[in-house]
Image (cartoon, rainbow, N blue to C red; front, side, top):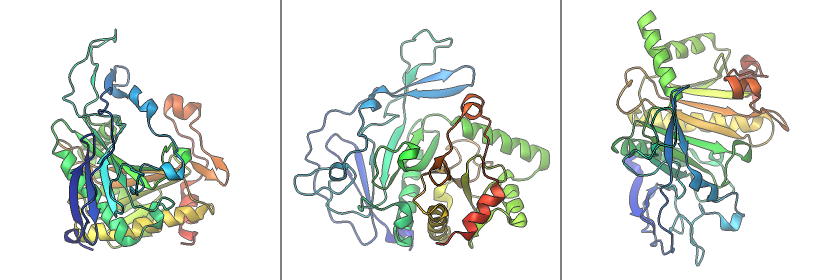
Length: 364
C-alpha cells in the first residue's frame, strides 16, 4: 500500500480543535460536530528544575479528563444517532484530533508570574497534544489490525510529524501508545497520542550527548554500531525483515523490551520510504503478537517513537521504536521501586537473552 492510496480529510470539532481523517478507500464527508462544548482549557504551564535541568509540565486541568468510561460512553467510538463522540463520523479508518484535555496547549510560551522559584522560568506550556485512533472497533488493539490498517496508522504518524514539526516553537514530535490499565490508560479504545514539545526532552538530550561522544571517539554512528552488534550477535534478535530489525537491547531495563531499528539511517518518520513503511507495518504486528503470546494474555505496554529533534542533532539521532512492558510474569508487574524511582538505576528481573529467546519461540 503506497502513501498515495491513503486519503486525507481535515475538519474542525465544535470547539475549534482540528480533526484529520485518514481513509484507505476514500473518506465520506463526516457529519458536523453538533455538540455544545465549553471553550478549550489553557491552564498548562512549565517550570524548570534547576537540579536536573529539565522542564516539568504542570497541567492541573487534566484532573477532570474522562477516566475509564463504560463502553457505551467511549468518546473515541464513531458517533451514532444522538450519541455524539469526539469523532463526528459514523465510521472511519484512522482519525487524529487535538486532545480535549491537553498537557500542552497552543500558546506562545509566554512568561508567567514567578512563584518564588530559584530561577524565574515559569511559563505557559506551549505545544500541542493529539489523539490517534487506530480504528472504530472498541474491543480491538493494535495487534488486531490488518497490515493495511497498520500501514494507514504509519501514514497518519508521518503526516502529523510533518505538520507538527512545522509549527512555531516545536522542538520535537513524540508519537506513542500506552496500552492497558497497568500503564495508566484512561480510555480502553485502541489509540495512541502525539506530543509536540516546545523543548527537547531530557532523554533525547542525553542520547544526543551519547551519539556525539561516540562519533568523536570512534568516528562512527552510534545507532548503526548498536544495530550491527545486535545483528552479528543474533542472540537478542526477535525478528528481522528486509528493512527492519527487532531486538531486545543488551541492557534492557524492562522485563519485556524490544527495539525496532530501520536498517537505513533516517532521522524521523517522514524520512522512511514507502517500502520501509510497508515493511514496518508487517514486522511491528508480528512483534506485538509475539508479546501477547508470551504470557497467554494481552500484554500492557508502552510503544514510543524516538525521532530526531526538529532543528538540531538530525545528523546524530536515528529513528527507532522502543517497546516495553511492565509485566514480568503472569499476574506479576514490575513496579518502579526505590532504586528506579529515586535514583534512576533499573534492576531487571529477566535476562535480556532469555526474554529474546522466549519472544522468538512465542507462537503468533
